[in-house]
Image (cartoon, rainbow, N blue to C red):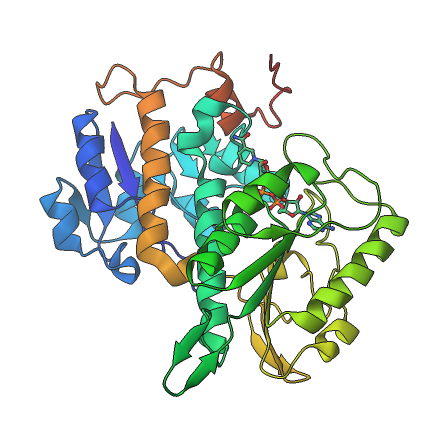
Length: 378
Ligand code: NAD
């Protein structure tokens, strides 16, 4: 079977779904691989590197989609891309079925089989190697710190130099899920003093193990909403949390916010008054910008200065590290391909009895199979 890798078409998207090293591994699994000319350019993977790895370079998206049995993508396909898809073809990439009902209908009408990497059952430990949400969140957390360091006018680490003593920067991280933990580790490695808070008490040890200090809200309420995700907190808790965050905002040089609740708008944690209370030259990186933002003054996609504080609301943090994110993403897809082709004969078998594959498969031969039934975990 032929796996096809088109150039991504979404504005500002620099990633590519498969890198040359992974092409080589897909060929070893028995697949033919076709790559649209220029697909890897924005992530610094040239056509020559793909060809050397065993891929056939095809000139246009139309050729690519028409000749491929399976298409590997990053972003959910546009209606134009769905129209190019072969009837009965397969697709592996981000789809977000809950947010894209029309796309689901269009794909079903093409009698497609669609594996949505965002629908992977992340609770399964054997699914971790396929978990692109985790690998992308880790990169975003890292990049958020780099953006903060770029906008901040001082060192992160404390230094004693002949020209004077420099105190370490103080970083506060709101939300310590995958992205928050990556931000904590990166900021601590740069030498900052890092504090963090999350509504899920279970993450406190992980914060400490990465070099941060966990700051608790003075209000008894557990924040776990199941599956490792957060729930909406009571107004009493949110009030107590805002009081604690107001104290942190006055003290911190940098705030990185990552707080999300599945299916809900991002909780507003940093008010305009808190921004106003920060020291001039401070920085906020709001990683929840795309979901409404954790800070009241965030402008999604923009870096703005308000009350002397730079507020970074970029929604393309992973694309800003396109070579790294393409590499990890394509490793995640390779792991899916290995699960789909256990015989290493270049033929895909979608085994709906397998929990991980069942979760990923949101359309099977034109029938919508999303959402998967809940997992029966031991
Ligand atoms: P996410 O992006 O949905 O949320 C980010 C963080 O925001 C979470 O830690 C959440 O608790 C926190 N948050 C929500 N409301 C908040 C508030 N008011 N104040 C402070 N923090 C708030 O989550 P994610 O990073 O994708 O994943 C969260 C967790 O899911 C992981 O940390 C992990 O425990 C779990 N997970 C499990 C597996 C696995 O079991 N293999 C894999 C991936 C993730």
